[in-house]
Amino acid sequence: MDFIRRQAFTIICSVAALGGVAAGVTGLQAMPKVMQKMNEAERVFNDLSSLDSGAANQRVITAEQRRIDSIVQDRASVIARCKTLYPYEPLVEGVFPVGDDNHRRKFKTTYQTAMQVLYDSMRPGEIANSQDVENMRDKIEAEKYKAKERNVDAGSVAPTPSIAGPPRTPADFLTVAGAKDNAAARAEMAKAQQFYLYANPFVVNKETQQVRSKSRGTSSLDFYVPMMNAGTVDAPYPEECWVAQVGYWIQKDVVEAIIDVNAQASAALKKAGAARWVGTMAIKELVSVRVGERYVPPFGEGNMVNGASAGGRAEALPPNTAENVFTRNGRSRTYEVVQFSVKMIMDQRDLPVFVDRLTSGRFHTLLRVAYTQEPLNKNMIGKIYGADPVVSVVMDFESVMLGDIFRKWMPAEVCEQYEIACPAPEEAAADKEEGT
Image (cartoon, rainbow, N blue to C red; front, side, top):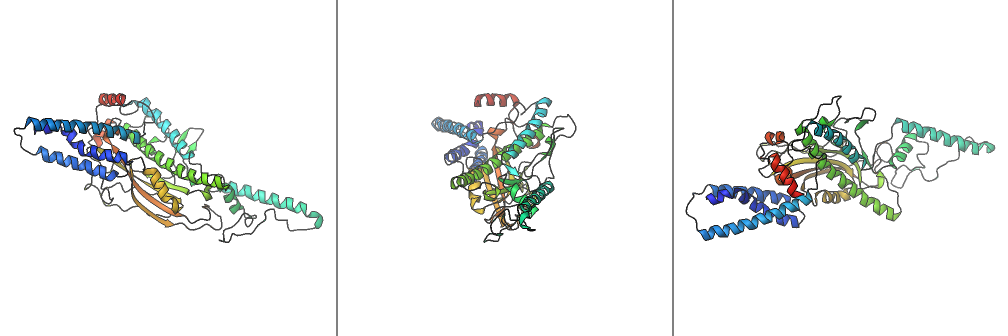
């Protein structure tokens, strides 16, 4: 039994490694099973450790050593495969795990820029504002004046329509012709033609270079509050930088999935010679993406939390518990778990496409989906989603962060908070050098 105890780490990882090999081949579609195997491996080790020590047959020990050597090789292959599925690097080199104040100040400004770039990459837009409507009203008056000039010789007081066509479609949607004198509707139509999806931005003060979020319930992306400028040059805390970094990694995956799904729709529209704008895209609006700021507690240590409801414009928050999700995954000796929620307005037919894009080749697992039909906007006032039916959908996900990948970056403050056995800084540096 002393032999088994000396091989503790390998035995704990053995089942997980073998399960991970199969998962790596299949694109890690069975992530919950991999986590289950890890937990089973730990239980097996605990059972073996409770046995009495005694004489051992050398031939058996030799055979077991060969088996363990094989498992170690398999495990190394799995970790190498996992690293390809975690294409993550810190936003600032050297900030984790023991960066100084200057590293963390740089991280703060880099994070602000990275989040803005992430937002802009979706080609987002907002509804028409009062100035847009006023400008359209002036344009309509100018059109009427020009039309009146063309008819002055005939003494006509009614302008010749500058936009021809029926006022409504067969499905009763207001047309451009029908809205020719409606400043609000025409402003919304003109604005919607300029972008791919609706989203609420962060407020950026370009003069002071300060970034602040709108209320947490309205901003589409989850900008981490401690990373905002607050009129101070103090560096953020290491644990704050870590929360912001993890949140950025996950949101980047979500945004890239949104971009890819809409890019597919855009390519099909281009091939068909159709217009490409928010009304013809697959994903019409990103209402919110919210990333849990704390790791999910182990099953049995959390609370039952109901998921967010679809519909409306309130943000959707992750339950952050293992109690009422089917995977029952919480942090463990070998991995951490982060939950996140995404709320969007989209074409229901493209829902499986988005989920597949986000979860394939990543350690993200869909936990729950809830959706409801979004009312059709036939009068073109407010957000315009097009003529096809759309749904408001809420999706809860979990992301499993393997310790072998991420703990080398974790600040000591995070390790202490969750009682995680993180590698010493020098060990983390050696691991990083070996990985490169």
